[in-house]
Image (cartoon, rainbow, N blue to C red):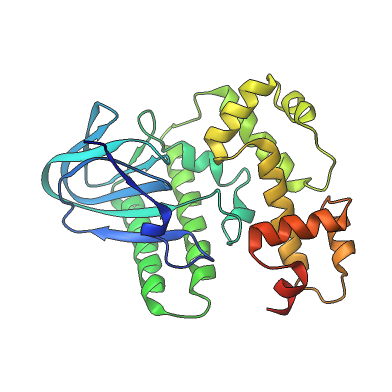
Length: 280
């Protein structure tokens, strides 16, 4: 029997924010499965065994870890285990999280990636994380018009706090190639209007094109040039809120030399033309 594969559509009800918080209290035993999205887990009570691609890992209250998208895992031998799952997909660009995935976000997240990463919290650090997660849960149920933006902001706070806690515990990035990829992600995000080529990206990261593509996809979920296009389109969607800027001007400002090509890409990714997006 094949493992369960849970798709984004099974979880994300709001297209504008592919992030959802799930409370598992108690967490039932669950067979091997994988998710299309990534999953940040915070254990609040009890203990049990986390099976990750055949490797067993004991988990207990205070453990925080990241399960990257499409990673096979399961829960077994549980004893009053309760946890929060935050399902999210950074590959999506039409939401507040995408514009914030530079240096401050990606490295902090990937320090917690299992099987090699993870963090155990207690005392004040445990309470800080629990309070933020509960605020996300409250916003998720509030129904407010600005709840998506508030959830994105709270999630950012959560990830940054976890990054600080990890560093204070002496947890650092073990793979120097990942650090170079993170730096390149930040450089592309800040200088997305530049006429990048794949060769320039590989040179900036100090690795071969094939190695860069493999590690970049593992970190972001997409290839370098696809990430560049998504950054440009996200920035364009923000600029479209300024009525004084023309569409051709916005295309040029964000790195698209051909405004017709920009419009085709925008419609493909957002489902509407730039003009219609501006009206809505």
